[in-house]
Length: 402
Image 1 (cartoon, rainbow, N blue to C red):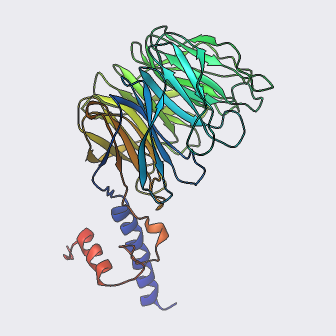
Image 2: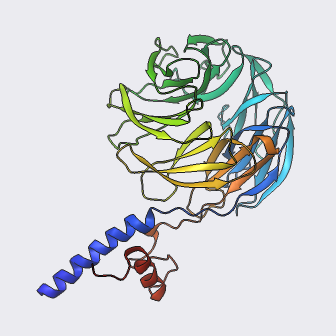
C-alpha cells in the first residue's frame, strides 16, 4: 500500500477510536414520564409478565396495600395502572418463573407482616391469590437462586429487624420448605445472590446498614451458607449491585451508603476476597444502586436512586473499577428504588423509578445510539455519512491544528 494511503488508513482508525470514546461515552435520556402509582411507591421492577417480549412495570406501594402494574404493548407504551391487592407495607417485589410453567410469578417482601407472598402468574398479566410464607422480622429485600441445585428457584430474604437472612428452599417436587435463618449483621437492607467465589455455588451478599457495610455468606450448593465475612464500605449500607467492574472475570460489588452519601466499590480478586476500590461521592443519600451499560460501550455503569433528591444519578464506568459522573436525570420527588430494562426495545437500557414522595412511578427513556450498530463514519447514527457526521467530529475535536 502506498505510504500516503497507509498514513490515511492509520489516521482514519485513530479518529474512529477517538470518536467511539468521545461520542460513545455520552448519555442522552428523554425527560421523565410520570405515571400514577399508589401511596408511597417503594420497590420497582421491569419484567415481561404477559409473554409479548416487552418488559412490564410493577411497583410496590408501602402504604397502599397493593401493587401497581403497567403493561407494555410491545412498543414501549405502558397502560394502567392496574392494582394487585395484597397487604400494607410491601418493601420489595421480584419476578421469576417459580413453578417452571413458563409463566412469570411474583414474590413480595411484606415488611409489616414478617412474610413473603408468592403470586403465581396466569400469563396474561393477572395473578393467582397470594400464598404467604413466614420469614424473619421486617423483611426488606428478596434474592432468588437455586441454592441447593435441584432445579427449583429458592428464596433469600434480608430481615431488617432480626439481623439475618431467611432462606426458603424448595424440595424435589418444588414445594416450599420452612425457612432457615443465617446471621448477616445489624439491620440488613438488601441481599443479592451471585457466584462470587467462582466455585459454581451461589453466595449471598448483604448490605448491612447497622454494621460494617457488606456481609458475604458463601454458599455450598446444599442450601446452607457459611458465617458472614464482613467488609467495611461506609455508613448506612443500603443497597448493592454486582458486576465485573474491573474486567478480571470476577464479580465486584457496588455499595450505596445512605448515611455518608457515597458509593463504595469492592473489587473481587477472583476468588471471592474483596478489597476496597473507588469511593464515589454522590450526595442525596443514595438509597439504591443498580448496574447496566447505559452508553453501549460494553462496560458496566451505575445508576442511583436517592432519598433526598428529585433525580436519578448515572455514573459511567471505565472498565478498571473507576466511575465518572454523567448526569442527574430529573424525576418526581424521591426516586428511592430504580429498575432497568429496554422498555421500548430500541436496543438501549432505560430506567424506571419509584418516586416515593410523589405517589408516582416514572420512566426515563435512553436515547443513546450505539456506534457499534452504525457503519464506520456514521457518527450520528442516521444510516448515512454526510455533513452532520463532520459537524459531530468537529464538535468533539474542534477546528484548531494546535
